[in-house]
Picture (cartoon, rainbow, N blue to C red):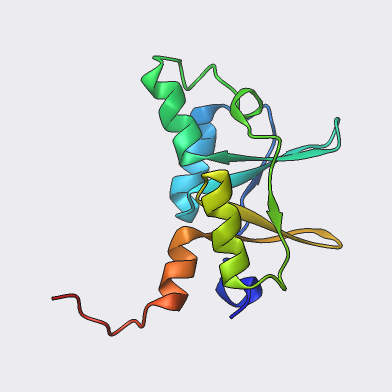
Length: 129
């Protein structure tokens, strides 16, 4: 199975000036665990995850003052739609993260998470005893 078969095509894109509270609200409303941070001025693409927001809160930082740009991971590992799920899982394991932005020639087309991969690998009707 390929990344294109498992990925979510719901890609939340925010700007670096969004506050962490705004980002969290948008992520919660769309039920996603990560957002693509697009900095059009710098021509850069990054990712902000729920873990980034959690880490900021754990440091007692103000989510109304902290910006997505200050907490964005910029050295992002991107997946291609034609990657196998095993390749995506290996990249996540090696990098220690749970989300991959999926890019094609035109930009972000999806997001694949560990949960997406597990959902594809484990039959829906399996029962753990």
